[in-house]
Image: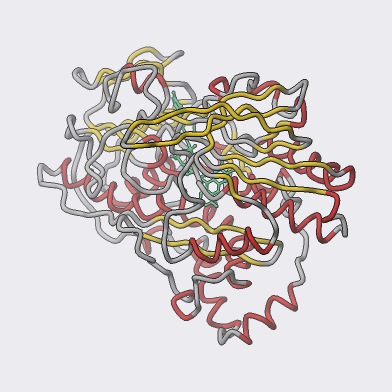
Length: 458
Ligand SMILES: Cc1cc2nc3c(=O)[nH]c(=O)nc-3n(C[C@H](O)[C@H](O)[C@H](O)COP(=O)(O)OP(=O)(O)OC[C@H]3O[C@@H](n4cnc5c(N)ncnc54)[C@H](O)[C@@H]3O)c2cc1C
């Protein structure tokens, strides 16, 4: 990781009334967490029994496995996941802006699986929630008493006509929603800024993980161009499928203002439908709604560099299992339905789901998952004990929107879209971008993920 004007960072931090000591309390929390003895994390223990199967060992699945392993006296946990690597996905934006190297954001999956958990390196291809059984591609059927569904979401690259995952980068059309894609994006941004032209940035019309990521990479390109003294070389445009750039009132005015200050126009209600990578043309539909009736007007935008976001849903096999909100293949919003407070499946009381695949109405971020995990784990244990699940998740999510190399608008909010600010940021004006939040984003959150969150300590 490169140094980003660190002395200046501390100076500004202290000018804003936060001492290094106060800030480092937070950093220390993440560092010390790795040194916590496991029994420190035993907020309580339970003698509950039962076979738990966790499908998906990413941010949510690993963190659940670790918590349950800590809290159950006789845990019987099987975690099914085919991956060799555990990626810290929020780092993809920082790879694509040259802050992290690509190798800084992953660890071997085998090193991330909690001790005591039986890891089945396999894929689940079907779930039968009526018979309490999952089917794997290599190990046949596996039964469970309790199921934790944490598969993350499916990125539907092919729903952008002209794009496949394998051709990412062709025609200078890039996406940071993929590890290799993030690497290619950084190479492309550097060359785009030198050669110049028009940069087009999009989000998508489905819910997507880290809604802030498309906005961040746009603003980071803009600042990178300024740092290279090449700002006049590039014209940048942001296209959102939504009716507003952001929908959390505490943060939106400043974010819109930043786009204005940086001369990046925001185009609303624009859904990316396809890309002609040969002609470098992005095909959008502008959606207008009059008296509840939607009209779709085709709009074509030429680009020299494109950053796009693919539509996302829960994985198809979950839809086929009947665990999702719909089995309809054409329905764009397909997620695992859970009670938004307890995270228990709305139909199957022995199934818990959290993270990106489930339908609680908040942002799909690992910050949200960090708060969901203790609630989901305690509720699962209550169910195992034959009790009602009483722990409640309030919808907390965080999206640190990087506004330039050195500043982050730290958006933290709950289900009501009210600010839910963490210490020590409670002492700062979080409606403005902050150096301290940049430090958190770049230096604290990654170790917090690998050594705190997925170890069940944070
Ligand atoms: C570019 C980008 C930027 C982001 N920025 C931020 C940010 O700044 N802040 C933030 O908090 N979050 C951010 N996120 C979002 C965050 O990374 C995700 O919300 C989080 O990783 C979701 O965790 P999850 O466990 O639900 O899914 P994942 O972490 O994706 O894990 C899902 C796991 O399920 C496994 N799986 C899938 N299908 C199967 C199957 N059939 N059988 C078995 N296993 C299966 C996968 O192998 C994977 O290991 C960002 C994400 C991206 C891509």
